[in-house]
Length: 142
Image (cartoon, rainbow, N blue to C red; front, side):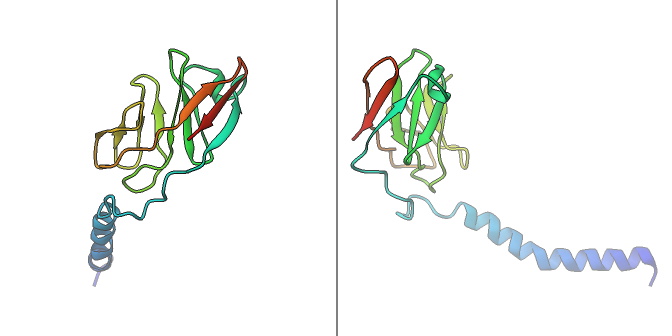
């Protein structure tokens, strides 16, 4: 057996061993959908945030605090929704250009109030009330 034939057989054998694991990984990564295993949205929420520095100081910025995404819209308003995507629990990101929330894992999109506008998620994010207390602070509560 020459070198080329040896590597050809070894490579083919390794591929035969790895293919079932790869196929299993691909199918299992998307098989859960709204099966209730996602952490529930935070309840009894009540906290304040400083909006003079950090991500919320700039329109379009957002942060995750206590399981909630708090975003500052380009118009200067504030939004707050549960951070965990209802499909599989990945934290959603805020898109200021579209004023919506996007799951980076499977592409679910939620509008500014947390309602699903594109799956695979089929349940809405929980929306929270945001009050502007002063020029320096907001209050997020349920």
